[in-house]
Image (tube, rainbow, N blue to C red; front, top):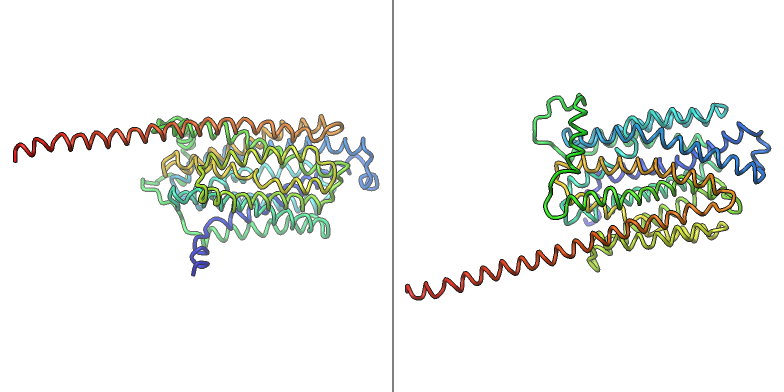
Length: 471
């Protein structure tokens, strides 16, 4: 019965798991496909199998630049789409915006399959598919959709745990995707991996359409919302969420978490995803496609452990707040990136992957805290802002880390990881500041409560003699 009761709670978790499995599977694979295409455009097949150091550096630099162009192509359309769709979901419900990204992904994986099947196609044809897919919202819209859905169906007391479980689907899906993707490419090539992703996104569309119940039913009249013509109103609603006057420090919390804590954290996440496949392939590590998949799977699995086990335990046993848990995770993350920076062989990379358990803790804690700063009718818009910010930070990360990696790959390729560990100090200081503000507010609230109680007791005591006298 206990298992059945937990099973009944499953809602959007399969959607996020399947979508992120495909995303994590395809992201390093498309980088490796681009690496091969770029190499074959410059050299023949025999040379590409045994690149000299100057040739390897050339191909790595060209691939790094191509990854940057790919990020720009996917980011700009999806930011606009997610801002529009997030506010729109507050007016029409969540199911439609959960379907649209998978429709775009179906088109994307068809493009990938064609590029793998017709290897002579120019590598930039991949970017066409990326751009079209982004118009359907991409992973930013998927994230805002699932987190808005889970916030709709939970109260504040259980939200941190449910958001953490949902966030774990990102990393557990990543674990499965990287394991399956690396093995498939090693033994069967790129097409089966992209074909699997295509099939999974078709299943997502069917599951959301036919099985998943709607979580949000707006109260106001919805006439005209389906036309998606009121773009100005949707964007205006996004700005209003940020500027609206709120009690206590809720608006300050919202702005600091969005544009301070999460911004720097997401830059690091984007940078890690952009350079790590190339870093693993670089000598002396010389990872094969399967080993790259295993390493990413290990990192994703450890991140999932951090979200599924560490956050609920710290939230219940010592009863730590969201901020305290997030600070702890950020400190562990610094050690993870420093270790990777100096990993000079395969076993060191895999040992370093074990420390990734802390690097996933901060985002779900901050998402949970953000959901507690706004009203239920603003959740879709707020998560749209968060998802759009995540996409923009991914683009910024590509600009920063791909350029730095290209410039330092021949003398210190691990420099990017040292920069990531230094950047993490900024959100740590911001979280400590918010924690101190929260503690101060708690003290003042306690003092106010004591003052009100004392006044009430004084009034009762003051009134008693009069009543006795009248008696």
